[in-house]
Amino acid sequence: ATQTITIIDTTDPVLTIPDDYTAECSDFHPMDAATATDNCGEVTIDVVETNTPGLCAGDYTITRTFTATDDCGNENSVMQTITIVDTTSPVLTIPADYTAECSDEHPMDDASATDNCGEVVITVDEVTTAGSCAGDYVITRTFTATDDCGNATTDTQTITIVDTTAPVFIYV
Image (cartoon, rainbow, N blue to C red; front, side):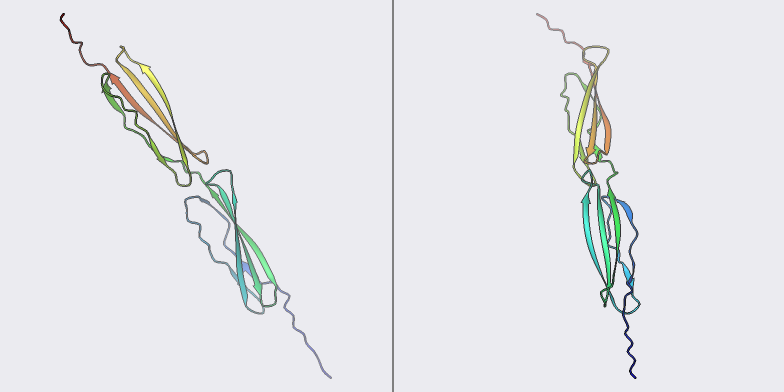
């Protein structure tokens, strides 16, 4: 008599992947390793990464699908989701406050801004407030730097214009 024993591997590998997380767009997003074990043999792990855009340049989602396959073709797939956000406001640099004589030049220097993950638009609102005489007034310039995701930084420059020069008599 002959006995035939057929061994069949129908068990999927056990796959362990990195946890989901949320990170700032300027942070490093490492490709952490996954591990897999199988009851009967070797396992290979493949990864497919997909980026899905969000509502602005600094917001998007990375989806990493890990698939563990054993020698018999049994497989197990698990997905890791990494949510990337831009919650950091731009860094705004504005011109310094100053006081000047009304007869002097009044430079209206520009501001500059940098952002961790995208483009920045700078707007300026300017208000002039009268002083106690025609030559005295204050210019208040409010600069706002806004990034692609709507994060904003605001700072104000004050320019004080004064008239401290006495009139000069002209004899005719």
